[in-house]
Length: 144
Image 1 (spheres, one colour):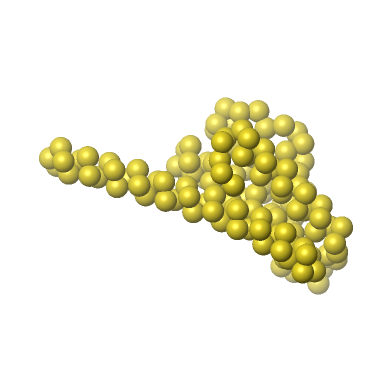
Image 2 (image 1 turned 90 degrees about the horizontal axis):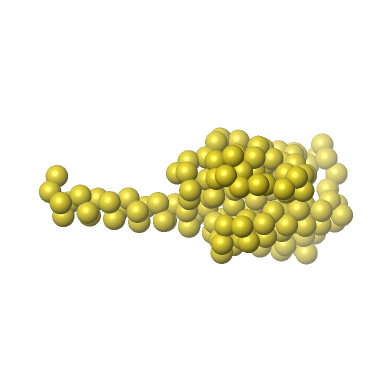
């Protein structure tokens, strides 16, 4: 491979990496907006699901950005701990707690006949997601 082909290849890999990172953070932002909208519209189960997804996409986005991969899990506490370990940052206990509040809603919200969803629960989920997303924004200078 000549040097110009190598440079072209390196730039294409860098471009793809940037696009993949952008995907994860854009989806995080979209899910947070959906959580707010559906809370206002009274779709409390979906607001909880979207809150969980916004944090999952943000945490996985960090791992993609800095490590190029992420674990296949929907456990947000586990993802937050992985972010701390892999990126060498302190993840405060309250961030783990907010993640743990959100984790069950990945499954429970989609089978809402087994769980009661109301405004209070949706507000708790949205608040938890907002706090975790704000922590990601501040600590990693990510535009979410």
